[in-house]
Length: 611
Ligand code: ADP
Image (cartoon, rainbow, N blue to C red; front, side):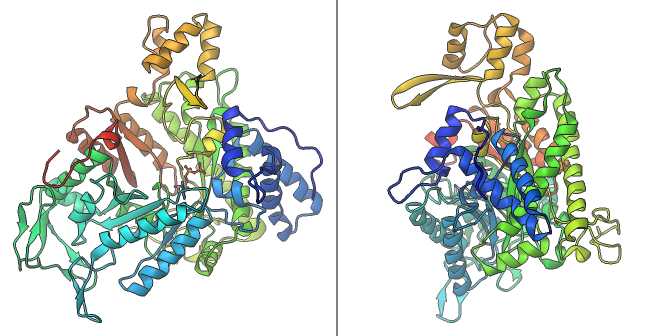
């Protein structure tokens, strides 16, 4: 099908530049041979073509392609980057998130290393649990040697990522996870204090509910060797605190640690470098839609997708700012239409996809996981005149995400009627009473629903697609109202256009004021009315607690998890980081990631100091 006249895409200059640099097709000489319009049509056509497999006529497919084209070119919805880059092209790998298993033997470790390379080459990100690997210095019978442990293999994976990235357009991203009861947990927690190490990984500790209880009660817990399933005994040197050198467990003694000491170390490192984050693994597994197929051990690189081994998710995000009317209300009807169309889009992506591994193809077809999320949340709030750090914003977050999650499930039910439910439906948490998963108290985890997709909602970071759609990213607050952008030796003022419009409408606009805002990095100037200052809050004005509460509000109505950074000012204390971590657990988040302003750039905590 060749589309003769494509309606122009509504894109900012920056969006066009990003597309040209990284997304548009190039020939072998490196010349760009696509326009943004032909790129979006390539994607729309490829994804709509799937409808034909389910009986749609050529005319219906064409209509569907036009609707998809409209959604993407007008910035209502964008699929994740691999779909934009690869749909309708020979590689055809359309998903952003993968998790691969690593078993405790060299064959598995290096098989999965190879698979990691193939996935990165195709533009996907990978997550791994290293928890099944035996600890450092444990026996290796076949060679009579000693094991080098999870952190050393993580380093191998990191180096491989480094090599692959030199070839491709997109730097590979990884998530590395270790359970809090693994014998090497202290080494893992501190492995990124040297900020030049393991740079292609985000790391998170898999935290169990039992561990959090032990923290609360100030109890000890056992470290377990995954090879034997038994408690680990400290070797010749005993177990030492990685920063102070203090002997925590003498040689020959069972390894038991004070949960609070471990939690303190996590907090101290996260305060210093932003890592490790936490992955609340029991919480995530409670919502595993297909527990009969395995447990969640790890997430994708940015944390929004807990996944099974060889599991995959294709993401797409709706731009919420587009649904605020001129009257300052939300256009729920249009939002419903876009949710339905986007759900269909993502379901089609599963069938249009070419995965690099057969195991992934199989599982993706059996559970049909999709990840519909949002971006432009901060834009929506300022257009409605609601401060991000307010109870009203938290209430609206629940209302909006509940609506999207429900409508996406209604759309998935419609798809199930047309095309059948996902093949594992009957045994999933959505299945009939006889087979559904239940909580220990006997209650169903989820009501019975005949769905086409085992999971529908998530909140991705939308790092690039928010630039393409010209909106604020994910559910993050605005980063700045105005700032100086340096491009090709010129200094350009980049100002939020809604802010400019409001200033002009209300009569307090001046070029000089906008420049002053960019110079000072804030809007607390006498010309800016107090009510405007209250609504136009940026990431740094917002107390960490509000960041966590916002994440938790979206999590309540999201099947998978939420990608969110909890921002701290530079002067924040470790105790404030601890409070955020504990609050995230209490409020039902599935994980948390923090970042303290300026910490990674100029602060390297070395072994032996306490920072
Ligand atoms: P985008 O805006 O480009 O679609 P996001 O910033 O929303 O992507 O990230 C979504 C997911 O894509 C991440 O959680 C991760 O799984 C994957 N991802 C992001 N950046 C990379 C990268 N550089 N390499 C590989 N995968 C990535």
